[in-house]
Amino acid sequence: MKYRAATDAAGKLLGVVMDIYGDLGSSSNEIYRFQGILQWCDNVYFAPNWKINIHACKTNTPANTACRAPASTEGIYFIEHLLEHMSQVLKKPSLELRQLNFYINGDRMMGGATVKDFTLPALTDQLLQSSDYKSRSEAVATFNTANRWRKRGISVVPIRYAAHWNIPTRIFHCLVAIFHGDGTVAVTHGGIEMGQGINTKIAQVVASELGVDMKYIDIQPTQAITTANGGITGGSVTSELVSLAAIDACRQLRTRIDVVRRIDPTKTWPQLIEDCFKKGVDLSARSGINAKTPDHVAYNVYTAMCTEIELDILTGEFIINRLDILYDCGESMSPLIDVGQVEGAVEMGLGYYTSEEQIYDPKTGENLSYGTWKYKPPMAKDIPVDFRVTLLQNAPNPSGVLRSKLVGEPPLCGAASVVFALRNAIAANLNETGKGADWFTLVAPMTVERIQQYNRIEISQLRYKD
Image (cartoon, rainbow, N blue to C red; front, side):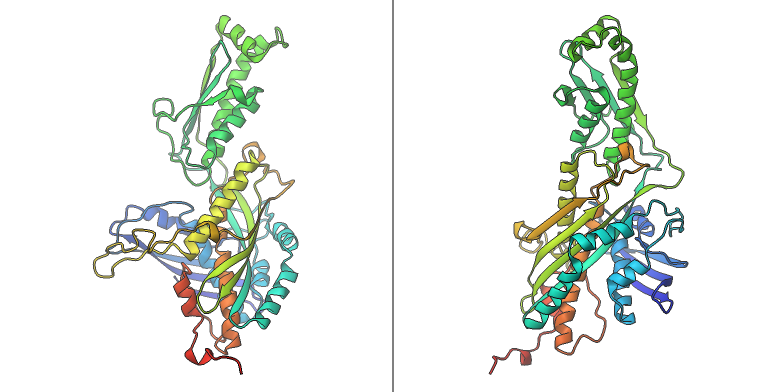
């Protein structure tokens, strides 16, 4: 990425220009995902003028595809990187600059949607307090003064993640069928369970809507016949939109069942369903949802992450001493699942930003990092020593399904905070050796090798004390 930015005397953004280059590999089959980066480059910041140019590059490497948080991860990282650069040029704390440039309700976002329900300023203040950011920042500075070859860094990164519902081809289905005899409620839906807990959430939603115990709910495999022409599972919105379809199907059933229930409200669920069967009540219902919202964005998720690292200057190795994340999940449908999703996304993001580097032969395009000898996914010891995930309380989402918000991809974007914490630790070392006056651009992933080189250790520095 190449970029330029203009600010006023206080540091408020006046205009941003970005030229973004994307390696699409040998074919452009994923170009639409690359184009999606245009939706994310503002993150949580207002500027009256934006110019974003994207350049799709064809190279001799294999074609790429999406995994998790495509385009949002990169777009958010780019603007955060720019603000870090502004911080050094303007000689203002990066957190202060971030807060100064936050959107406010009523602003028009870069993508055209209007900002509303902007909870991020209060959420950020709450994170700063709960993470004890001020005193820990002072402790980091004290530690760095007292230690030559180990440095610490701390960083806070705020995130806005848009829930995109208005996609015509994304229709999500749910079929609910109740069986007489034992009252089993079989459910098949159009989402794909890939570890995000969609089956558990749908089971909870169906049980709640029908007023039955979870033991009666049986989630069946997704089938093309019952969920024909369904949308893809992605963008973190599938769980909630399938839930919307499940709610609609259950309410159809409840309308029919309640006619029989009123005859004898004391009957158990299996008895009630048996009576419905004998009276010829249709005990199957199907719904297909193609959600429409006034704006392209149904709502925004807000989260903020505070990361503190400790770096070995000589080797480039580091540990994450503590990571705090405060996540606005609305009224969570399933808090244990959502906390697990936050933790997993953060860890995946840490790998993306620090260790998982793809290496290709510059002449042939051959993948040289095809195994764990050279490609390093995060392991158990890469998990933060102190990992604190908090869901924002008393923050129902009026625009969400059951007042909830999506979870899955936003925390991965927030893992960029580890890069800036590392940068602060490296800067502390360079300032100590008189090399920290100039801006240095970080290239992610921040591998051990890169970190070691950024520290610019010279043989003259390696002397025993007298």
